[in-house]
Length: 106
Image 1 (tube, rainbow, N blue to C red):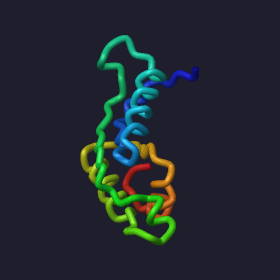
Image 2 (image 1 turned 90 degrees about the horizontal axis):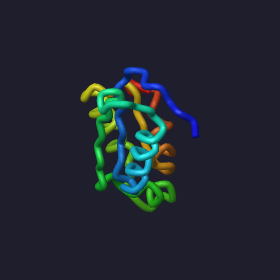
Image 3 (image 1 turned 180 degrees about the vertical axis):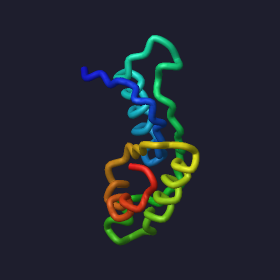
Image 4 (image 1 turned 135 degrees about the vertical axis):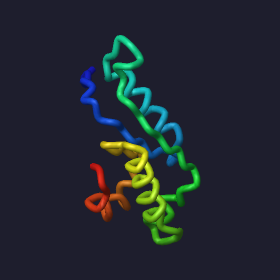
């Protein structure tokens, strides 16, 4: 298992799009970031928004685009202090790719 060293950056996680995906992401983050104390773990800000429009429906042109909500929530994480963003949802990236360059953080 690859271990990662804390780099001091605050992580913003946008979850809720398959809540178990975000939970698994956070579980793996804790498992792969060695820490002897709580303070050695990375700082994580998380928004779990289960009301983001369905990505698959939107991809097939049969539902509302989630892009505006995704962008707003990612900007909210940046406003909270996140310096690196993570979105543990495969289909969300279909939309995020269109605006990720305009986000204040990677």
